[in-house]
Length: 316
Image (cartoon, rainbow, N blue to C red):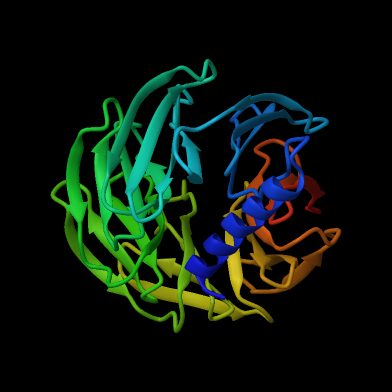
């Protein structure tokens, strides 16, 4: 099942739950997760809207509905003064909404395109926001007001992920068309394409480098691989093949490992240098759609297709 098939499955599960549990709020599949920089709040998104949970107990603190049908991604600005959420109405329009954080007051809403957004990302300054979606394009907008700055065209199929490299001069996008593209953000031109994946690419995430070495990025896809890149020069460094398509990935805080969620409901730690893998203990609770690593503790949270947000311990 490719990325679009998984998104449709999430929507169908949410609709089924809503029909069968009319007297209470039914759990909807978790589509996106982020942890605040102080480690105190877990923010999740689903077809039911935005949910805030405290870190210690994962108890719900607040729910905020959305004005569109599908919510696929959310992210905090680098200074954590804003929360961007994105999705839209299938076959109608994409929508990005910006809220103040932590007040959650609506700042602006932008509807565009003819279908939904799947992924959004801030640049390093928080002044630009990139949105990749079903229409094969990446829209780059002003983070302060939603004004459109560039539309990046080049992918031949829906864009599943976007991410800025540290510094903000380059933007990564990945797609069902099996490619990762590297864009110059100043003028919206294509710098290079990375074409080693053999099936849909589901996510691409840059790491951090403070030692002067080239920044690494990790990508995962339906070809069951976790691939490490130096995107500034267009080089694939190494890759690891797993037993099932990989749906989501996140870096460890120290950058020495990545954590990958797979379609067979497993969570796997992959060492960046050696590619050694460790399967983490995760109770079966639907396949893992998204995950976020805690900034201060050796733990992460996963969001599942059964609507669960679950805390997982990770060894050093």
